[in-house]
Length: 115
Image (tube, rainbow, N blue to C red; front, side):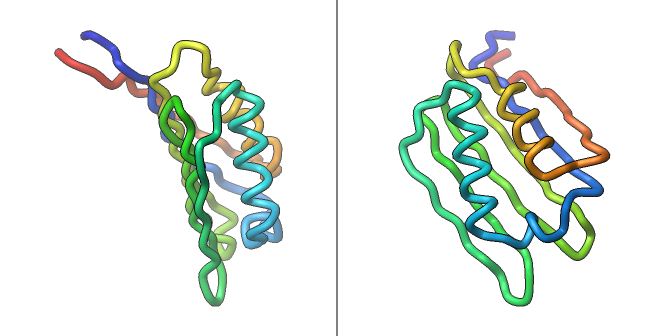
């Protein structure tokens, strides 16, 4: 395979519910995760749902980091996609795991590209 990018599909169980429902904290955490991984941030968008939950995307020159939270289940789904050689996607993942106080993370690594 001609790998063009790496995608991390991350299921985060047993996270801090208060953080999962705090729009400002989630935004700061994703931006911090992108910077920690060495990404160049080119934009972001976030939305807080009523009564709870957040969705957000940080666009990076290398691709994106996205999150969807379900505070009522102490759960977040994260997608980190990178096509850059210098971006350290695992560092970003670890930053999110620690920042959400996740006790049960699962990471699936997928190589994306041409056959």
